[in-house]
Length: 170
Image (cartoon, rainbow, N blue to C red; front, side, top):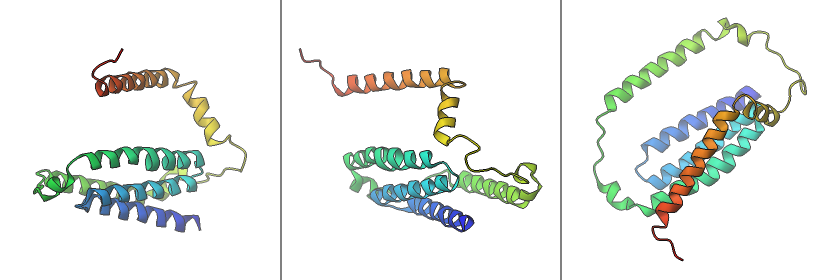
């Protein structure tokens, strides 16, 4: 049953993402991106990462997409839709797609020969939850990169405030 849901979510991700990149209307593309995020959260739930699924929905499908939609609404969509958009990198896109298809085909063809996939068994409650595991790794092994990222985000936030408010009222 899980395999059926995995294939359904995977087909939904592939279908929604293909529709997203082929839409001329950017609002429709943004809504299809939200649908892709929901399918991704379904994959996370199947993998047992419920916390990541909730973060995917709340942060990406909720918060980030609001920013995308505000950006889309602020630009002149009608003028950009009427412009002819020709991308010269179509050859490279087709070449990269063929390489990716070959890699996926190779991995799926040799899937049974990987020893990590054989004999993998786990029991419920034998491992800590994904939130505990994420917190322990984040605050022990990756504490310094976490703090550097927080300082960079703080600097970006201060920069955005400074750029948004050119004059300081006293």
